[in-house]
Length: 333
Image 1 (cartoon, helix red, strand yellow):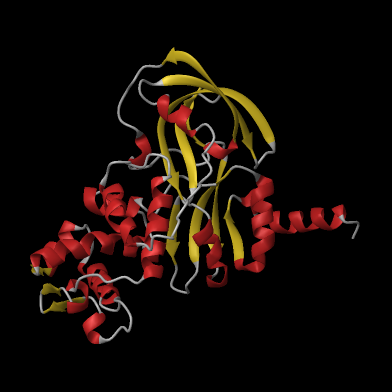
Image 2 (spheres, one colour):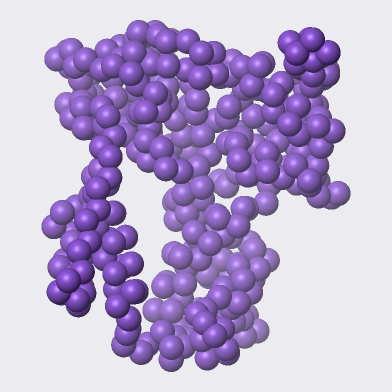
């Protein structure tokens, strides 16, 4: 599919000074950045536009656009006093806390119930801190529910996630049976977990893979069997989850393709990870992706129709037509 460029990496890039990827920032990246920038500027009340842009590794034009977006956010009824009060005054960014945000929070029973339910669900997730701030807040909010209210949250455990976490430190080799949907194959391999992380609702393990001799990323729910070997591997460096290039995403990728994606097929860019993206003047995007299967790419091109064209390599230029012919032949048409 593609070299891993996750959304949360946008915030890390802003804070660490790493070079951002080419192309326009997505809405998710901009919102994630604002969640960091707004508390920062609200604490300072007034800062130089150039200083703030430098702090968060943005151009002044990008920062201005984000501030304009933030100024349209607030709470119902979205009247002027309920919007985030942030604006640019000449060469300074000015931020004030609207009165609606400074009032004591008052929740009705339904809101308290929803808050407790979501909080308890979060506490059930792997890695949740049972004695952290969320647990403390839940202990204070829970008594506000009526006596006859019962909140029970039951989240299915992620199979093999505890074993993978335990194998991280010290680094222990484990043997897994892994199913790859792109090729419909199962492989037996020995891996050394280096990082376990969640992204977009799925859990992944970044590990040294003896089968390929490379660092690979595996989806935990595609591991069908796992055996701990007790063999310790050399420990080196830090987990590479937030490296400049990130761990290799979908490590069985064998070839890169460059696609021209029309505005009507924007869902391709939003749904699948990519290596790089360049926005064209006509609204289309030139996207480079790492593809693990010609079959997968053919199906994607078939779904997108004429809205997605292969720029390179040349041997994939007619893949959409070839895939269509194969589908028609399968159904005898």
